[in-house]
Every structure is written in C-alpha cells, then in structure tokens.
Image 1: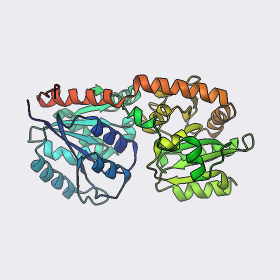
Image 2: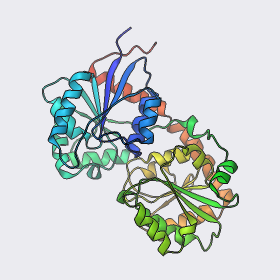
Image 3: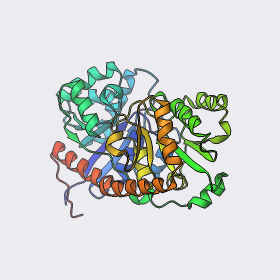
Image 4: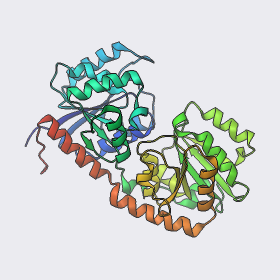
Length: 377
C-alpha cells in the first residue's frame, strides 16, 4: 500500500464563512486512510463552530499569530510550518495564497488554490499581483462555478486549472436533530408563522440591509411572517437598528452563529439571500438539501443553483422591491413553496453531494503531486 498523501489546507482563519464551511466539508469527506490532512490558519484560534467540528472530525489544526493588515513575518511562519509538515500538496483559500507563495518558489510542493468568489472580489489588487505570479509558477486555480471560472479568465487572462463545484453532506442537512414543531416551540416561533431564514455573515457582500428593506415590504401582506437571521459580523448592530427604525424589530430574530443548521432550516419555509456578489453560496446549497425554496439576488453562481420558477425565485441585485416581490410570492403560497422545495431537494441530491467534490479534488491532488493513492483501502 502506498503512503498517504500529505495535504495541508491554508486559510486566513476558521470563521463561519462559505470558504471555511467548504474546507470543513471537504476534509470530512476525504478518506483518512488515503489522505493525511491538516489545516493551517494564519490567525489564532477564535473558538468557532468550524474549529470545533474539525477537532471532532480528527483533523489536526495549526494556528499562527498573523497581525491585521500586511504581515511579512506571517509568511516566514508559514514557511517554517510547511517545512515541518512536509506536505505533498498545499491547498490555499482566500488571501492565504499570498503568504504561502514564498514557500513555493524554491521548493517542489504542489499547490491548489480554490477561487471562492468572483475573481475581482476575491482579494484586493495588491494580492492579485502575487496571484498572477503564483499561477505562472504552477499553482493550480480551481473555480467553484462556471461564473467564477469566467470571471477568473477575464481577470487573469487564463482559464482555471479545473472547475470543481462545491458539495455538501446531503444526509446531514436532510436529517435535523429536532423536528419543525419542536424547534419552533423551543425558539418561541408560532406554528402558523411563515418563516423566512437567511444564514449569512453581517458584512457588505451579503447586503442584509437590502434584505431588511425587502422583508419590510412583505409584512403588511404577510402578518404572520418572521425573518430569522443566523450569523454574526461587523454590520450586526447596524442591521438591528435598521429593523427597529422600520418598525419590524419584533418580526426579525437575530440568532447569532448556530450549530443546529439542519433543524433551523427544517423549521423554516423560505430561504433568502440578498448578496451583491457571490461565488457559490454554501448556505443556498444547504437550504436546497433541506427542501427549502429560495428567494435570492441573481449574482455570481446563484443562478447556477436556483432555477427561477422551479426551485425558487431570482431577484435583481440591489433591488429591494424585486427581492420583496419574490419573498411575497413564496411566502403567500404554501402549495408553491412545497413544490419548489421538493424540486430543490431533488436537484441537491443529483448535483451537490460532497463526495463528488472530494473525489475531484483527490484526483487533482494526485495529478499535481505525482502521487498515487491506493483506492482499495
């Protein structure tokens, strides 16, 4: 039997964003008998849900002490850590590639970089200079959707090395630990409420101010409607203040970061996302796997997931009226919600399985590193 392939994922931090959740799902899906995987975070541990899930899954995690802003000393710390771990493959996320790059110049390490967002939005301009050099050096960029691939080629004047759609653990999302009625009772949500849910970081990209405006437009026609917001971030207080100013603070529940995502989604009626830009939102994929119809702005890879009129409704970006209309249509028609939710669940089961993503990355790791993995183990 061949030795296991040594893999190190490098990521700025282990918060609760889409890149971090993709990393968690991928590492939990790789077979530890074939792949020896670990994670290197540039920033210190913060006690996040992702960190605890990685620990529970037996994935070794290492943490550096990066300072805010550009920090050349962090690149040195990355070099030292990779020298100790001796990986066959390094897999970078977000702006971590800039800090890994010095370790690649004179060492034969295969490197994969997942492009999680529209290329121009992924990293600031200064990082793009380093990325162009990295891709010429042989780092293999991977796009997560066709739209991300198009944006990458437009920006860097070269196609990505691969297009590997994100996958999620379908069985987990379809198997909540609490049923709909029990979860609602535990959270004080009435049985007859029409529940919209959004799982997103309170950051400019997600434009939750737009969502509050859109939801406010639906409350007159839907007197039982409630909006659940799961997540945290720098704009939390601002969004809370906006809900208060619009007189709907009692209709909006701020849940913080949650560990019970399958139960939260299972207790909801419609998933909503109001982003200004996206790659492929893991949150939408999880909602579809849980059988929810989706109302979302048509940005990035979202239209590749949400088939408007079949699995949900797409709205014009930055248009509260358009998003509000989509929410109102789904919120006022239970039969339509059920039909679209079933269609979303079927689509998820056909195309979004994490095992497909894991197999594609495993093949890419082997090809780039020249290592063979014994798939009979």
